[in-house]
Amino acid sequence: MPGFYATIARYYDAEHADKIDDLPLYDEIAAEYGQPILEIGCGSGRVVFHLAQSGYTVHGIDNEASMLERARHRLNIQPHLKDLLTLHQGDVFTYPLEGRYKVTLLSYNALMHFHDQDAQLALLKRLREWTDDDGLLVIDLPNAGETFASQDNDAITLERTFIEPENGHLVMQQAVSYLDRVEQLMRVTWIYDEVTGDGIVKRTVAPVVFRYFFYSEVCLLLKQTGFTVEAVYGDTERGPFEDGCERMIILARPVSP
Image 1 (cartoon, helix red, strand yellow):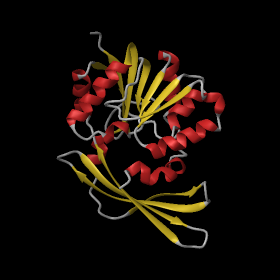
Image 2 (cartoon, rainbow, N blue to C red):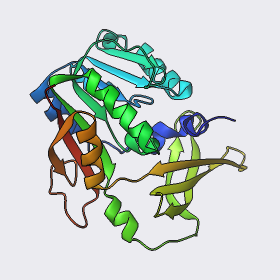
Image 3 (cartoon, one colour):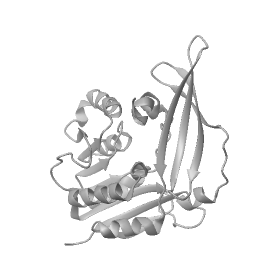
């Protein structure tokens, strides 16, 4: 059975075409801390391509072949970026990635795919190994407080509509979700209804589980793995992290051995 991202790979880029608000923040951080830059869970390359196009040396790692196939296709049609952008397919826990990086990124919701504490600690320990002593780790997560304060709703919700660029079909993306407040897990079933040229609706169903994090919890995880929090923001424009903010964007510095 294919995994979540293998199932939705052909929809992902169109679905996130308007997700650009975090890119200026990464430009600012790259300008301050330098290169090379590493992104964990780079997928089809939304962030790494932007940074490479800005002139930075970037590496991206992901374990989903379907997403990296899309990234490699993009790289093949932009050969001028091949000296700046390197893509790695493998398990972040075991992949033999060499070198150290000035900036390591767990961009948009990436940490939410690591559900249990052992996996979270193992991941952050690896990132400490890969992050230069004077570098920076960036973690971008939703503000869990807002999600946990919301009322449960078992209804199917229309999230967005978009045109799938490869065939021009209209896609209606819907979701139904359940939040386990004890385990801090959100179980979501994404439903993609694609209207084909002859009017037939083709449905794709893709379940996924996200782990939500609270600020104090992330601080403890970072402390246990050799990082210290330098700043936390409530949005990609470095607004305050406070009640009602949308995001929890944490900048963490390595602690000297």
